[in-house]
Image (cartoon, rainbow, N blue to C red; front, side):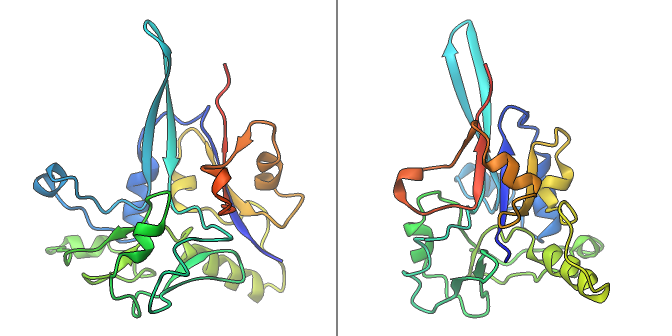
Length: 227
């Protein structure tokens, strides 16, 4: 059994944004430019929210990376009229880009606001097209996008393990965000493996989830910061 999940240690996160940049590079995500950013438009699959604790002058800043929570009871799935989003047997909330018609129903029904509408075709003038990841499609305008837990990396590791007639080892798969985090605040792994690092952290007393009361049952956990 496999159910992919992720843990963010907010006590380690410095808000540097390396994970956001890595996500863009790995998944061929467009950048919208200054003019569109001023209008509040963005294409980020991963964002970092900033929170303040305490009162001046004893103020602490906390950072919370937010991405698709890959919910077991995902509110985005039942509202899609073309069944472009669905839950895989491995616990991923997948997207079929060739089926999506960009209704935005899924984005409107997502309580975490982690889906973005691809509203224009990206431009990669020569030689910038060489930076594109050949393992990830370049999405056309008119579709919804979101974090996939770097499913291309998952499939690559599984193929290698199958060739070697073995199981994928704990920690063998790293998403782009977890690999790039200088503070090692992100851990990715199989939530169905009781011996995995991600399970150990998810069961910590510091562990919590975003909007738990909604009953979406996310696959992403957050470790609360210490004093």
